[in-house]
Image 1 (cartoon, rainbow, N blue to C red):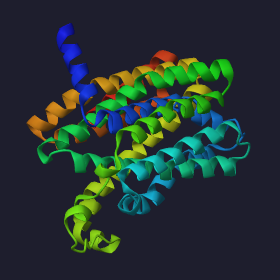
Image 2: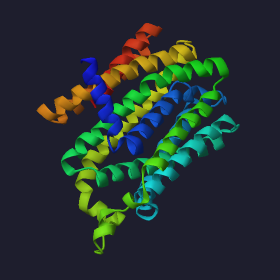
Image 3: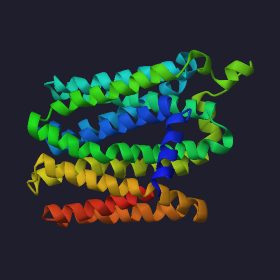
Length: 328
């Protein structure tokens, strides 16, 4: 692509109405999350606990998000989009930074639960804000861009997180996480006005919404039973990769934090490069043609992880898993 076209695209992105309230905070959160990818499993393992307990603690964020999804779906109607995003970001930032000082596994688990709740609240409020402020025929592209932004943010994070941990200790990346995420908090606070914070239904209609949890389950039970179950297993695969790869690299292969961070960064680059081709595949042949091969490739990659015996072997296998994840 010509430099002039690149500059034009960058300027369009900067002027986009969703850039400050949604896209830039998402980049900051993705980069900050990337900082923790190579070090979080090793941080928990440093408490001298079993692999089972390590998995449980690292699942704390997902459990917190699961428990928080229902109240997080209600709070934006009471706090507004801006208030909900700010509360969610604050919970996530403070609970993650607290890991720098925490000295017991129960407190680590509690912090991860709170981080998961904050993440759920922020994500739901953010997507509701996108739906409220974006034309129907542009919502797909607006939300799809989050996939690319997430992967772009994760690109440099693991290598930097691994380097910081190797030089300053396993706990220092948590403070760096907070410092970066504060920019997301400021961006949301400065860019969303109260006048743009109302639900369309609240502003234009007085009819009862009837959006109770039971009503939602009754109305959408087929979708939840099929797509919901698939999404559940998909997230299990993705979460398993983030836990298994760093632990296997450190405990079995004896790789240091910088090497683990480099593996995660290269795999993130592969993942990032695929978000646009995947969109083309979905547009031309349908979502199933991307989803089914994606998880077959990820499954094969995970099966081959125990057979790797070197940095290069693990990098090749992790790259294959990232390729599959990029397709998904």
